[in-house]
Amino acid sequence: MRARKNTIPAKAIDAVEHRVRQLCWRYADKLQFHGWHHVSFVRAKAAGFAEHNGADRTVVEVAALVHDVNYIVLRNSPAAAGRDLRLGILRECGVGETVARRIDEIIDEAEMATRGRHISLEAQALSDADTLFKALPVTPVVLAHRYLRENGLSLRELAHKIVGEQRDVHDSGYYFYNPKAAETYSRWALANLQLWQCIKEAVDDPNVVELLDAVHAVDLEAEPAAS
View 1: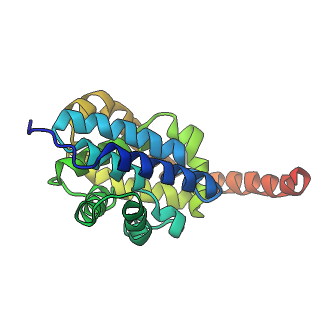
View 2 (view 1 turned 90 degrees about the horizontal axis):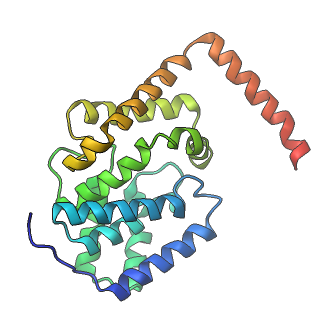
């Protein structure tokens, strides 16, 4: 384990936290899945993974705080779409330009859709925390419908996205980088992927399609009554 560094002062971290929390509440309607509940979970777990793998905890914490601001900028977008907003937040909160650019690179490294086996320790800590949020057994039950609304996706599109992005990473053995995280959470991750694989298959069944169409029709009829 390499020596730990603390590159970013506590005052700057607190400022970033305050700013991101403000944005999460201001844009709560846009961030039904990626709101403060997600950011705070990922920040806490990423900090713990950074302590374990020797990454710079302060850089990891700040990266976790700003990793999903792209969803404010553009619906259903990659992390890179939030670069200007992300760098602006870091600049106004006193994070130096070089460190801010490094944080932006770490966020790109850690993105599920494109991450590889060999990424920086900071990106590993962020990735494991973000991946764990996806793999939690409660996420499909409590939060999947929020992701659909936030990003304007159908259930079929989400199932294809999850299986398409995560299956090869899981099967290649680096779904989690941290050995302890892999030992603790891989069972959840596999169950989650199996569930979404089943959903991917189910939404191509004509009878299931008919069922979902009927549910959607009921929801549409209920909306005027609720408003």
